[in-house]
Image 1 (cartoon, rainbow, N blue to C red):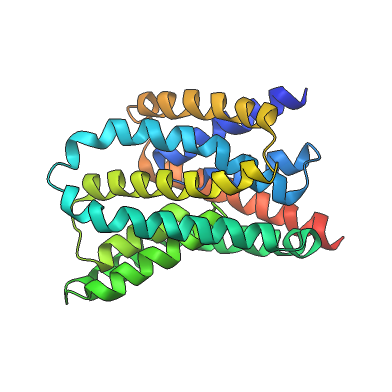
Image 2 (image 1 turned 90 degrees about the vertical axis):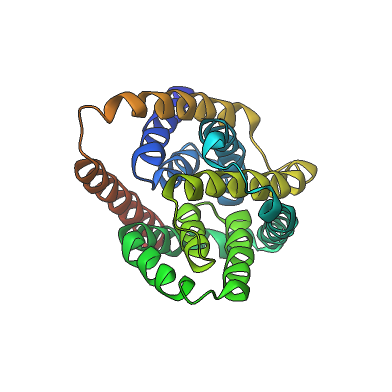
Length: 248
């Protein structure tokens, strides 16, 4: 029963991530619901999501030609950020992290809802060529991503906009490259500490893979606005449930 629940959560989360975003909160909540300690659930969620990031990179690779020079300095920055975020998670007391989870989910949901406005604001400053600020924003975003996955994609797109990027497909590809690198960095630490539940993670991973593929088919029948509204609704329900569990 738990495996089926995690697969379903991965299916929904993968679909949401591919179409609008916000799926990481769903899969994380499902992992916690099955009884995993929050820190283990977060590490396992990162493990499961990384497969979707890698397949997404392959899909966007044709849109990232000519970006090798930028990646030469960005990749090490992203890797170090992911390591620092993963290390910070492992140093966090389990009870403290459990209490922080509802607020992290609320923050991720708010980022998702304000994503377009956040990206436009970053693009406004990016037009002034604030490259150092963009690099710093990317580094801090990857620290956050190594610590908690929810909202990572929106923050990354904003950081790229701040750096002066404007091609949406290329930005989505870079976002997935950075998510892959920072997640792998964090996973190295999580694996060494034995914080990953591979059985539960694989169930979510399979669901994410199928959901991401199926989402491409859904785009022919469901509008982006409808998908985003539904995703926001699900995120709000998950966040409300997390607050209820933590404070009831």
